[in-house]
Length: 406
Ligand SMILES: [Zn+2]
Image 1 (tube, rainbow, N blue to C red):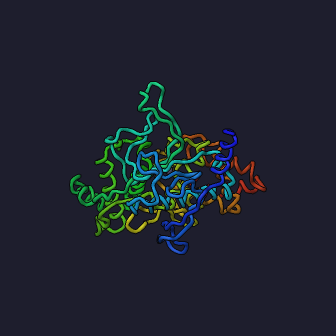
Image 2 (image 1 turned 60 degrees about the horizontal axis):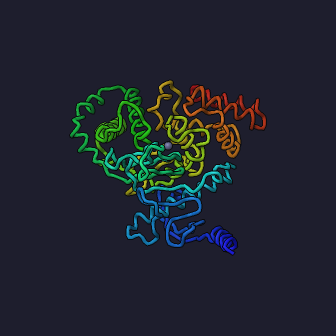
Image 3 (image 1 turned 60 degrees about the vertical axis):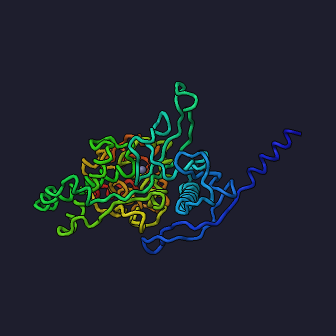
């Protein structure tokens, strides 16, 4: 009798999934603007919180899903928005890409407003150790080692973390850091050097925004240096765009949980994690996640501004940049060169086949693969296996890649 009851409970718990309507932030199909739209959230296991079959949205380090009735309305908006876009991403990876990862991966915990650094050995670094803002990351599953005291032991699956937004006053920081002489110096420089510097700085900053835990360049994790870099970058960006308008942007801010393409990007890391480790951030790994985010977004430019929530610079799928050996460096992982190069593949073949070629290319990619030797070679290999006319198609690919400077 006991067994029978248990079975019935199991059956009923599988079948009783809920749908509930919420207002979520979406990107307009016609413009880059955003607006709130009423949608149904599917596959909910609870009728009062964001606990779903595939995603569970929690606040900070909490184990409990955020309640539909949480008094913090913005938190509910973010929970609904991330839940909605992740569900959409899951379907895209199953139906459009044909990946079996969405089925293999168990429920993903989504953490909003979390400021802790990720610690591979302990899940969360100490609360007061370098709190993080304005970025998102996906983390690999893991558990604490056996020597950790019982009350500190923890085990977790794959998770996506969205940091709180923080407005950083660019002008004030620039003043504190006394970078005025630097901007004067810039004015005397030739255009190409400014472009080069701008690219370097933009990419360095983006890397810190999206995956500061994993960046190990000379900037380190020091919050002030990080913020200072943003200030300098803004100066350089504005200086090279319009010399008389320094500090055009007063603030920098990025609320990652409300930028749909950031949500797709983070989910893509999990989908690619059978080959590309989530604990690493390289131009190839970030470019792959950007590519699938862009495919899902159906936009030329991704990570566009969201009024009141992000004034971050977008990445362009049609960027005309060409290859340079320095693009291989880790600090360049935030650029759009790899994204634009991958985007070129569809010039040669039907876009669905392009997704497949690029998705399958991951199998021969190592986590530390370079762009030139790793990514380009893997795409050509993938074409040998999956293209309809491998020889002819590969020739076309060579042509496209050579235009990029390879
Ligand atoms: Zn990333």
